[in-house]
Image 1 (tube, rainbow, N blue to C red):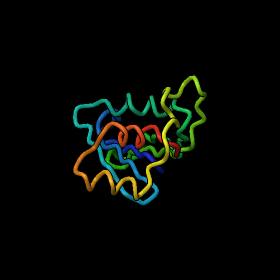
Image 2 (cartoon, rainbow, N blue to C red; image 1 turned 135 degrees about the horizontal axis):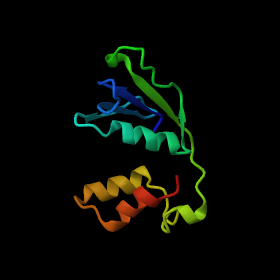
Image 3 (cartoon, one colour; image 1 turned 120 degrees about the horizontal axis):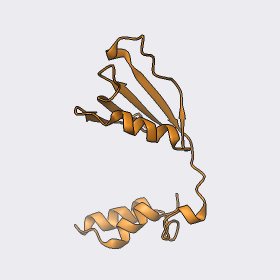
Length: 118
């Protein structure tokens, strides 16, 4: 993940879109039509893995309100990590192809994807 950006659609900054961009410039857009985007922004502002790049400006028209966060590598203590983190090898292309060619996904592939060495 490279950046998270919040685009507000109302002056209260509760509705709008969350845009997630990765390093390959692929985007995911999550729509918040019924509020809650302000709560998510508060969590992002508290999260040490994100750095705020721009602040809300109430003088700007509502369709221009946005906040951008840069994602920095979090430094998690071992106690904060999942017990299975880094217990599994990284998923290689050959391993992935062998699993997908068998038309099955077992628990090993799922664990390697989520808990493998980065």
